[in-house]
Image (cartoon, rainbow, N blue to C red; front, side, top):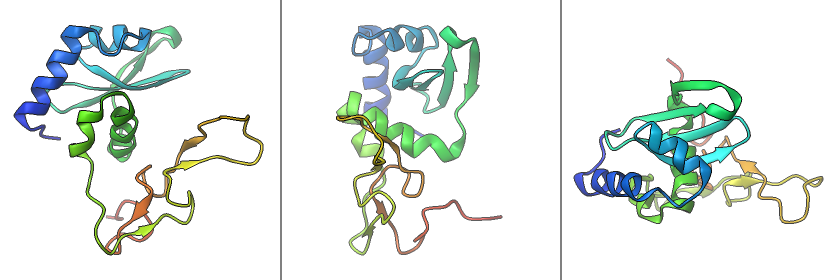
Amino acid sequence: MVLPAHIAQRVREAIAGGGVGFPIDDEARGHGAIALMGTIGAIWMLRPDGTFWDADADWGRPLTPLPDELRIIALVAGVRRFPWLAELLPMRPTDGTDCPVCAGIGVIVHAGSAPGSSGFFCPTCQALGWLSPVNPTGLPPVG
C-alpha cells in the first residue's frame, strides 16, 4: 500500500514516540513499525513504507509479511489505536449494505462470549461492517 506522505510521517512519529505505550509497541518499534493489533501469538504491524507485517517474539514467530487478505482488518484494528489511520480505509459506497454476518458492526460476538468480550473481526466484510454491491460476498475475487 502506498501511504500518503502525511500518514507515513505520522507512522514515523508514532514509532519514535513509542506507539501507545504497550509491550506490542516495543516489539513493533524494533521492526520499524507501529503495532496495529496484538493478540496471543500475533502482532500486526505497519511500516512507514506502507508494508504490513506479522510477528510475535513471545511465541517465537518471526517477522513475515501479513497476507493481503488481512490488511483491511489490520487497518480497522489500527484505527482503534491510531484514529488518524481511518483515511486509509475504503469509504462505504452509498449503495453499500450492512454485513449480514456481523449485523454491520464489523465484529462477530457469539452467544458464549464472556460479558464485554469484543469478539473477533468479521472475515466476510473485513471488519468494515458493510459490503459493496460490486463485491456483495466480501470475498476476494477468484483468479
